[in-house]
Length: 277
Image (tube, rainbow, N blue to C red; front, side, top):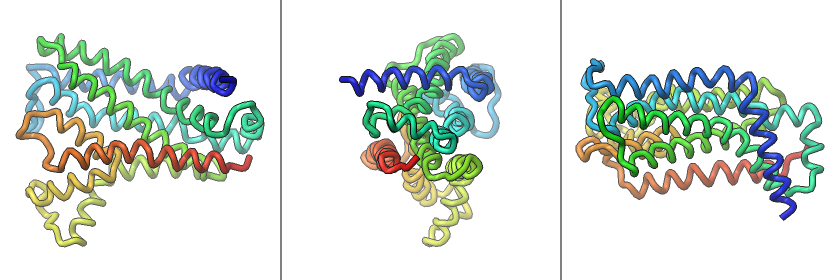
């Protein structure tokens, strides 16, 4: 019981420090602009959306706004967590923390949750506020299932990125390499994953010259299972009307959600238990 009391006190202290840090002060306006702004725009019945984009219910608004969540909240996790392990390690604070009367596993979870919750809590509050915006704009409140799925899978997405960032921070020997690892991972999954998918498809003989081809779309959906961003959007896409849902089997999506939740977290905790300050 003593370990858990120390864990709670350390977590509250870590959250207070991170949520009032200059990084989060800069991040808050970006989250408001990207999340509330995108939901307001997509839920506006008079909005003129580009291309063939059409809004068919609240689930479509949530799916379309997911891109803006990916661009802001996930980058926020990288900015908050890039030095969570490397900086205390360099300054000697990590050695003091490891001497506390708490198991290394709980201390590692404390670091992970400090990064995750410092971003996930304000994002969840903004998403809940967005549900009210959707009701104001569209005249009806989103279904409970859609709302829980949107908020829940976004929280899981941020946990996945927090785990990846903590792995990078635990591997880094200095702050510069920690930033590089974190930003490179974010860019790979956020900006370059489609290019990676096209290259792999071409190597495997799948025609990637037409990204609207059903064969390539099926291949892309399966490739997205290996990207946290892809899994996030597949889950939200599953909430859309039947004609817009992904063709990949639901079981593979569920397995990917479990895999992205368990594997990076377990690997990070394994590394943390073996860390030498």
